[in-house]
Length: 105
Image 1 (spheres, rainbow, N blue to C red):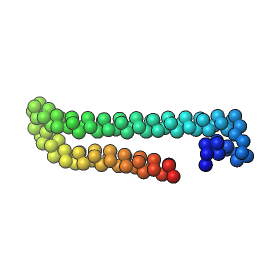
Image 2 (spheres, rainbow, N blue to C red):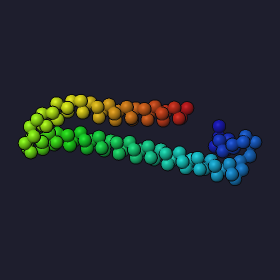
Image 3 (cartoon, rainbow, N blue to C red):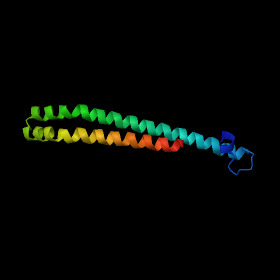
């Protein structure tokens, strides 16, 4: 289907000014949504990366402050923390890609 057919909302074969404006607005909103999705993915990636990099420093900092029990607990949680963060990011990116693939069909 051509772009003209997509813009013809009532199917009469003529694209009126109102139909053209509605179609342009729809395209603009799709672009804004896609941009917001990319921004959300970028933000999630940076927060996850920051957390993964700062987590070991929190263990060292609690040990330095003298909270040896806290540093032991943080060290024990690290295995679950890294796997959980990786799973959250991977599932978000995976499901977003699946949705994007469905939208193209």
